[in-house]
Amino acid sequence: MQYQSIEYTDLFSCIKIASTENENAIETHALIELSLKSYTNCQIQFDLIEKSLLRLSQSEMLENASVVWKRYFVSDAINQSGLIKKETDVAVSVVQQAPLNGNKVAMFVYFVSEVSVEKTAFCLKVKRPDYEHLFHTQMYERRGDVVAQTGSVFDTYSRSLQENGCTLKDNAIRTWIYVQDVDVQYAGMVTARNNHFSGEGLTKDTHFIASTGIEGRYIYPEVLMLMEAYAINGIKEEQIKYLLGSSHLNPTTEYGVAFERATAVDYGDRRHVYISGTASINNKGEVVYPCDIEKQIERTLENINVLLAEADTGMEDVGQMIVYLRDTADYQIVREYFENNLVEIPKVIVWAPVCRPGWLIEIECIAIKKISNPEFRKF
Image 1 (cartoon, rainbow, N blue to C red):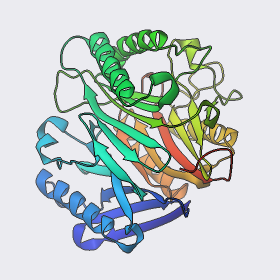
Image 2: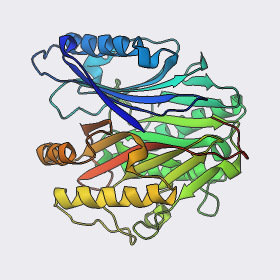
Image 3: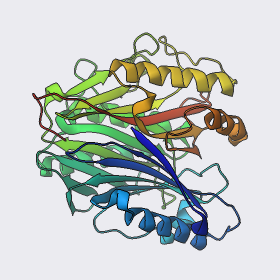
Image 4: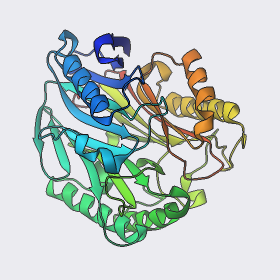
């Protein structure tokens, strides 16, 4: 992975970039944050973020690349929803998970070179010669309790996959599920997801899907859960490996939830690894180092390293990282830790309580490694 930092001083922005170098297609992850807190006006902050993205997109390094996915982390989704740029050819995610650097908005952007795109209601199809990459964003239901909303959202997602020649079991790679008031509503979301998965043939004897289930709000206050998802049309079963990390982690089914710890996808020229939301846990499913943020950071990263190693990858291959904190008072410690470790990786630290109160921190990431496997078609 090639890392780079850019500052646009006139736009008060700092951009961390991670890119692969591959002749078939270049992938770039970029985190855009504001470097000064002088402008507290929402409109100004969102304008600065968008202008920074535009300048980055027009730079020589991204000459043949297209923005395919934008994720906004915002501090007040209801009031800031009108400031989100409307897009016709980009997957847009919006979640209220306040950036803890003191600003109102941060943005992760994913660029891919040499693509064509087609957008429908919730889905952006990113077309390459041999695969279609399906990004579903802002899937929600406004009626009913969290069980009903979760069931409705998964029904919608499964129908959309079928309309695109895919199934949840064979093609879905990663989900992100944001739950309002996670301490109360998470159990209901889990129940509905388990029921839907069972009906689709996703069980402990088959496989589940890499996922993050975390606190997050949407632009409508009655939305109790919001989902994003990534699937691949054209992928084969033998290209997908589910990572266990058994020395450090236990199967999620042992505490009643249905997701994979991590998933690796092999193409002919690269390997993608999707690490689910990972916390300070041991292989018995117990919270490790309760009330100790510093030790929880270290154990969480140790768990992630075990999962990455299982896919023959490492932190040097990580293209983006999201760090979720339960207690905003821990931000200074966590920020200082990352200022001294893993400095180059694009990462954002946001406020988002984890699904189990004892976990003070959760981290997810995406890694990309160059490989050569003639059995599979290239990315």
